[in-house]
Length: 293
Image 1 (cartoon, rainbow, N blue to C red):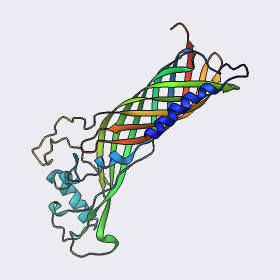
Image 2 (image 1 turned 90 degrees about the vertical axis):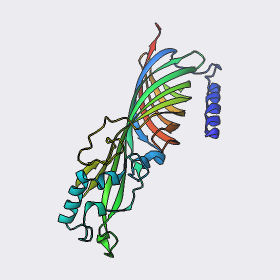
Image 3 (image 1 turned 45 degrees about the horizontal axis):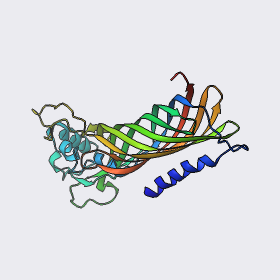
């Protein structure tokens, strides 16, 4: 990370050497610009196993699997379809043979922002982005509670899904230089705040979906246990980011830019708070110059 930051600083400095024949650096319009961006996001899987349903997690498979409220339905459906052995005599005997290894799907992000450019070619940028992420994986239920039934029917394969929203707030120092023929390059380096909101945690067993999101205050969701008010399991994290863009300027209107952004930031989830790398490929539309400001 340190090497990448140093490289971005050097790249910012090197853009100052891009000049016309008269020695004057090629620069775009100065002043305030507004922009919108949209693109794809690849999130670091470091926090994805928050949705794996392990016993140590905030949301667990067993809490739902071994509850009378849901376990009876799960056990009955598995028995009816012949997916578990008669040796599994009740829902309390259902066992997780293997927990899932979760990973994030490629997602999207959208955002709005402001930037202010000075005659020197430097400027600042404030950006607000939102991404909706899904973590997926699969786990195995034992079909016979370990009584020796072998082969392809030894396990029942079940899906797992986690859903979350993330909001990113980025503040950066920018460097933009025109390189001729309407083309420009931009480098950004800055700080990030982010907020994660957990939306759902679902398991799929034999075609039926069950939420394992803890809305029961850590208790088993049996009869007589009412739902508690859901409290977001995410939180606020921080980090740094860097971006590089190439763009085309439309005189007196603005610019279209294609760029890459890398966040090295902390994602806050219970017991899965860690620094990770998140990557975005964005298309940005800028409108400038609001010289009256």
